[in-house]
Length: 197
Image (cartoon, rainbow, N blue to C red):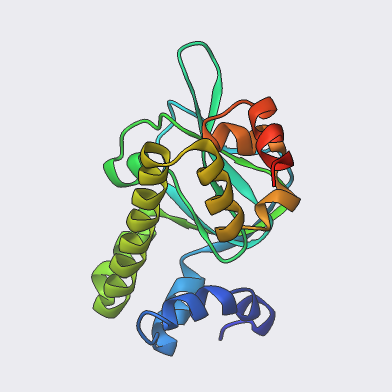
């Protein structure tokens, strides 16, 4: 029997999957049995460069970032993720190779964590869940493509306005230094852009 308090922790995750393809109760029970809800404080590294990513997270509460260090040790932020989003080092998780990225919490977080081998077992056993996983993967690939195109095609000011339009909460929850890094500009440049009308 699924614990009601525990099941309620999963409502947002199940809602996300149900929007793609209806989940049977049997699959919901299997997801709960093969994952865990964890609490992590702010500024915890869930993954370091050089480690192999074997866990995918769903953010119930909180915020996190994904970043890498260049050869001089300078950080570049590549993703900011919030409630009801998946948190993953895509390259390492899917290839099994060491990550070149770090995953770090920006706030105290409550996460649903699923190990790669457990996820693979769920995909093999439940084909409709496999379909949902593929659709989610497509969504994140498209999101990554949009971000890459914006960095290549738009000015810093245009990138800032697109980010503000798409993710206004970012500016209340993430430091300007992190946002500047994500946009590929200095913090001083970002401050100037923010002052322009």
